[in-house]
Image (tube, rainbow, N blue to C red; front, side):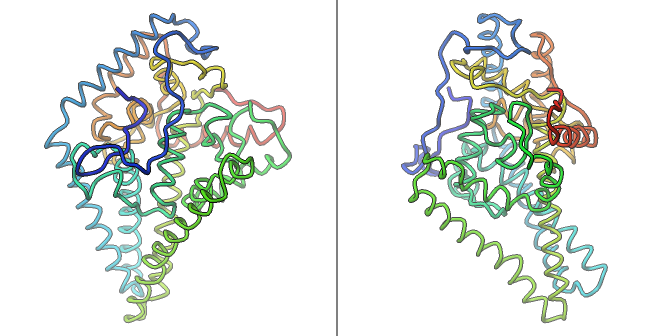
Length: 394
């Protein structure tokens, strides 16, 4: 049974697709990593194995319960999202009127957040592949984000979720831009940590698009020129699509009512709002106080139970309302998402109390807190790690 993420499958047959990349890092059947993380050092191999079996059982239970209600949920969310987007763009067509501009920009912002977080991110994880719906499938979905879906699936699903917070293997620790862990050597450029993060937030989709090109891997000879050119071509096509939709088509039609400039500003604002929100949610799930990072030795030779432990102590949740959970794509349940990235997101709230109880019983921390606290904690770490000799609590 796979616990990292599902294999790429075709909508019709459920068979592996020929173009998918090999997923790295097979887990050990037994034993322990070279070094167990300090937060789990009190556990024996037998206890870790039992913890793994308990979490496997939770996953199997949800897999057995998936059905019509779950399918109806995602279809309802998609319907709502499309209604918000159509309404938002329609309002922007007459956005010379200030009330229409505010309404259109707000609705389009909500639509983009919902598509990116609760729909796109989770569909691309394969959470809904079991429905065998060719329109809601990880191999066919192209999200409203400038980075191509296939490129993101490789760096995110294949690499980040396998090596979560392992410094040296998970480049999501700082996205090759920020110093986010004391294990990362300090350089003078790190003084700009807060500035870089402030710029990254409203441009987050562009930062991810560049990151997904794996330019560092290319420079180090780990990625071929052919592969880079292929990714650049895919990115170029996606950029044209996004620009045409947001910055050409909608403003062009709005020009008929004298609202072209306002519609352009509205789509720019909606994208920036979505980017800032996505940035905040993702950073709060990985970097606030209480989340651990790991050395490569801590991942070397790890079993499924050890991998589970690393996801729990290396992640953080955000507490809040049901609406907030939906708008985060249920990544407010980041711990549960890292444990079970291919389970339907609407099931994470059901799973969370069971995971928390397991953490308490095995003496493992379960980090959670309200949004503002997690945002503040994350920014605090960014400022601390900008300076030499400064460390941030893990």
